[in-house]
Image (cartoon, rainbow, N blue to C red; front, side):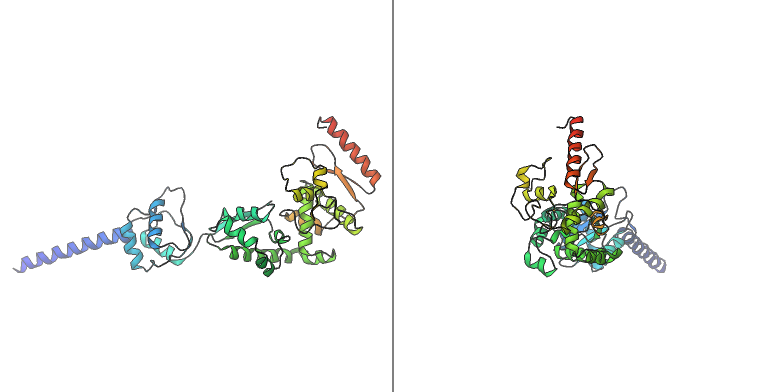
Length: 344
């Protein structure tokens, strides 16, 4: 009898141990996240519920046992309504418990938002939407709201000057307002560096005006080396109240961005952005200005040049002149260069 009881107790202990081992293997030690996946990022949309997160984990191949995941998630109080949104990076070899602990912590993997060379706010909105959760329409609604722009110190015309080309790390589920607030901070940090604000004051220009001129300089030349020279020529024109006569502003006014040649259609198009018709700077930037363009204006070359035209060769450089008669000589050379290349 005693021997039979001992046998039964031993059997129960073995059974309990087996159950415990199975539970430990299934819920604790068993690898949940397999190796060799193409992408280890999980996106949890704003407002998503627990079932949606579970389905996403299954669809991405992060888990194979939804029942086991549900048990662990509920026991570890990860399940909530709605779930914590964001972009999370999981690691190959993570167990279910490690995965749930990581998701529950809310530690997100940021995304890199790359902003360069955009022309219009709607283009910026479309670029941002490639990286974060809100779509371009949601972002552009904010970008085109005059009251909101006024609240952060901009007008619809000057708003583009907020954006400093760079790569920014932000959270995927950032709202349009949160993203814009980040840009405001980055803008301030940029102008606080390298004495830029003081240099703008010495020019008797606001940062928005410097940015506007820089956006023109950027579109006049692809050669960084001559940007300070071109910036100096434009500043000389502004000093004598001479129209800037910048072809890129006429292209912007007409929105004829695909044109390869500026004609009378562009230069006679009535718009405050047409610097052939109206002296001074246009109402705002004609696109996103580069950092090199901004610094070219702030650190412009001091000279007496008023005029410039393309050299006409493949260098993309310009010839500069102090007088109109010198400029006409340069223009004649330019035309001859084009003829030699069979372009006229």
